[in-house]
Image 1 (tube, rainbow over the protein chains, first blue to last red):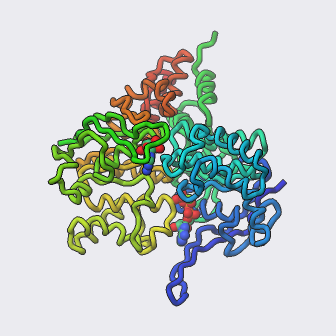
Image 2: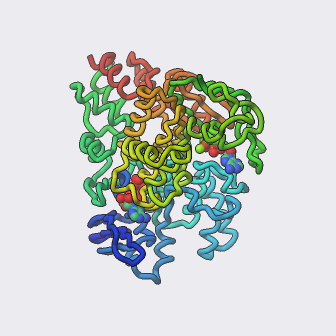
Image 3: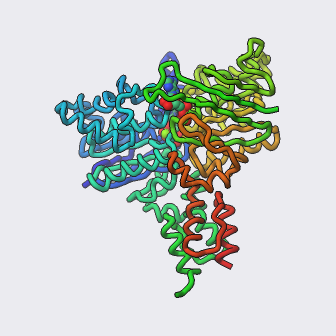
Length: 287
Length: 282
Ligand SMILES: Nc1ncnc2c1ncn2[C@@H]1O[C@H](COP(=O)(O)OP(=O)(O)OP(=O)(O)O)[C@@H](O)[C@H]1O
Ligand SMILES: Nc1ncnc2c1ncn2[C@@H]1O[C@H](COP(=O)(O)OP(=O)(O)O)[C@@H](O)[C@H]1O
Ligand SMILES: [Mg+2]
Ligand SMILES: [Mg+2]
């Protein structure tokens, strides 16, 4: 079933001077048609300024199309009456953790969403605990969020969205500020939510290795979707990705470079395990 | 000439609940002309440490000498210190406050006492160096994408031509192409202008490739201070601190375990390609 649909979505940031005359127009999203099914794990890649965040902000009705339309779980985001339904169904985690934390105490902040939704108190606490554990921040539950370092804050923000039990989570570079371990914890947690509970995942990231398990990858360039495929299909095109200012995971690059030297290893290797087994196939001793 | 840190301690006044110092007896020498990487789990004290080096935070105890001068001494010129030790903040939003991009970058050099014209020339050059296109110059910093903000913040620091350039996670939020550009720019500043670089990063791959030395922080303390190969050889200990080795190191370890005679101290893709090709494929 389709969860998110964009129809010829175009968005322009328009700047006006004091008299209201248009000074400049930036077309940040340009005629995008997306169709994301419930339960999918979708990744969006693209250079800085390619329009990823602008697109993402349409999914929970922070921005509205200049032209075209966006449907979330069948609801037109322009329908003002559905605003809170849409926002509950598609939770959002932003790039900068400082804009999303409001509570004075971590657990209070995480409980804020479900409380607003009218979830019974006992369940709020169990959701808070489960969400904080999922991001490895349970031991900080009594802390004041503004005393946490950047990475710690981001994990709290993610917990806050998890506690709303949304159908879909849109994550806009959620791991940009995390250490390797924190990054892994977050990706594991959201993948778990996708695999176990069928939550639709839309992940925007500049870390290529985070999306090797995605079902489908979209690549944006200047507001448009220019590539669309499985991680293997996308990561098999190293040169094209480089032109788009992107990259591939280290293991993919290693295989690609060996292939260029004449080694008969396929393009689009995604994991260490695949790589080792290919090398063994080619050069391993026959026992 | 160098930055010398002796027994530096720091506690945030509203001390954290664990009752732990944010910096715990830090001793470190950063030699002129080196490229030092600093890694550590989030909350390990990296940002707290680098904010001491240009006087943004005041130590609880200890001593910091920049080129021999005690930065907490009464006769220390703070303005001069901030242009000598340039710091690009972890969150560029905290650094951008002027009405438009160009004024923002001009602020530092003007504040240092440069004439308007010199400041503008310096700023223009710095913006170009950081890959900021002309059409962004008169936009409000608030209207930039994440990656664009970071480049502008960096240009603002470079416009002051610092001798020591500290970057607190400068590539977070940059696209891979931009990350390469910024890192190549930094290493060029080191080679051509003999700038000393201190790079705080969560990307093990980046520090492995670019840094001459790596300092590892854990819970407010320095636990390792060594060349990349030696640091990443201790990947099991790093994992216990929330860190890891670059992905390619793990590939080399696994190949070795599978019986291939490869060098498992390798930390970059280029080295790995060569080593695997020579030892296995030929
Ligand atoms: N508030 C705003 N006002 C005007 N223009 C904006 C605004 N926010 C973004 N833009 C512009 O819209 C375009 C798309 O920006 P967007 O933030 O969606 O990019 P992005 O793909 O998320 O980039 P990044 O990887 O750097 O986060 C860019 O040209 C940007 O400068
Ligand atoms: N403004 C602050 N007030 C109180 N405690 C802080 C503040 N900033 C950071 N801390 C605490 O100091 C420690 C080090 O944080 P920080 O230097 O930001 O780490 P890093 O940059 O390595 O992620 C953490 O325990 C953090 O919670
Ligand atoms: Mg963005
Ligand atoms: Mg920090």
